[in-house]
Image (tube, rainbow, N blue to C red):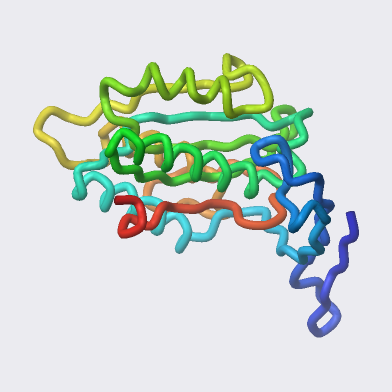
Length: 215
């Protein structure tokens, strides 16, 4: 892995990393082009930005309004697996498989995700997504086929996120609590979130679905 630091007025400002690429085998590791590694220069970050936190919250609210409540909270630990080389490629491949799986059942998809890199847990994915009731057990079975490791705790943990009977999202709801937990890797307190350092991530640190493309 090659790392270069750019300086501005004698002070370090941005780290750019050339990440290694593995063979293009989907969820197992990073994706390449025609079987050949691609050279990618990606920024490394140590914190979530306030704008990213807002984007995650806005996407969750949009999903609820669209009738796709984010009701399944999935944590996947990538430590000691090929997927930790490029967790963004792993996440994108997983979301594409999930989207197609739901589409075959004429069901919509919506999601938000955050990557963290803990000192003990290593790189892991927090994924909050919409899996309709009645399909959650089958989705867990699908994960056992897609993932390059056993889809069982402690490697993979899946929890249900309940919504209040009257609907809507408020700060004391289960969803709001999960979002605060996912967004704890911020630099300063924001919107009731207490910062907890979550390590350095090379490449995208979070993402949301595009609702218009998930129908």
